[in-house]
Length: 71
Image 1: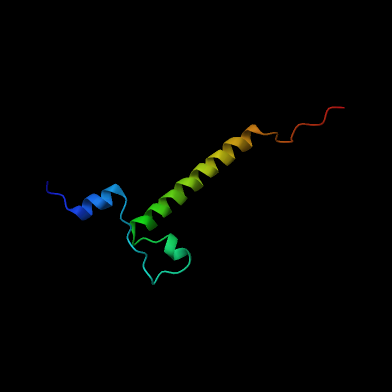
Image 2 (image 1 turned 90 degrees about the horizontal axis):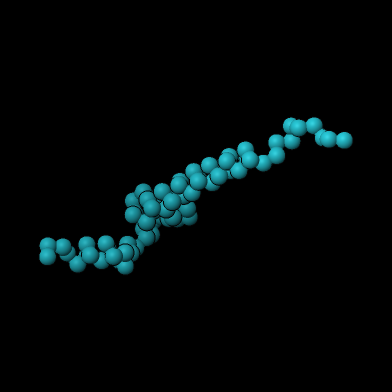
């Protein structure tokens, strides 16, 4: 087969790498040393882009208030 068991376990997503005990606070969630940390960074970045795009698209469709009031 050629693949090791640890590779298959990592590919299935069932084995989790233990967190580094030296990391504290937000560094534990968003770090560049673990796969989970890099994944969290990419998800947060993509979410921020999507929120920014939605904000500006929906902002343009709203009432700008530049039109004078009709009597």
